[in-house]
Length: 231
Image (cartoon, rainbow, N blue to C red):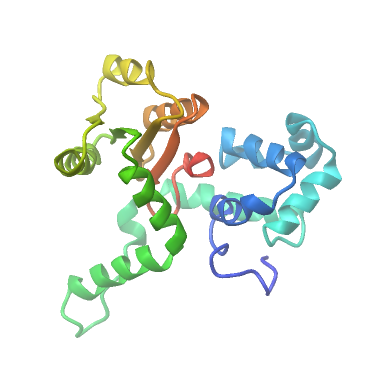
């Protein structure tokens, strides 16, 4: 159960809470967050001593970290992770809001989803993403999934009209691996990942991040397992 004073930006998934308070975490607490990100959300569904050992910290450090996330104890933290894991089982259509009777069909539901998208993203996050994409010194790589590659290709196309140094990443294994060869601190990696989340997209994003790239993630309200790694 979240504490009553948990702010709106941190409400939601554990990954969203970590992102919201990451700048307030101590170094040891960040180690716990990194372990959680490595196998999210199942990496947190272990005894607290096991999670602490994996992060190289003490159990009290883990408790301090989850308290900063707004949970009143380890059981509440794990309950939230189990709920997320269960939500990932369902199709995205199962969580699409139903249109109330007499409201004109799907349009109100669609507008509600658009409103939720902007309400759930902090303005400074959007501004930071735009600034990264507009950085003239950056090289932009854009990767999509089985279906979301259409959106990724569209973004890459529009960006290439506005600036140089933009490349869509090929869906094939060879193209994904080749794109990582020159990936580094001057790279901005954009990943589209929606349910059902794709392991190859997640792995590519984590590897790009490990090589120093700034990572922008476009995902759904449940959040891709890549979200704890995203800038």
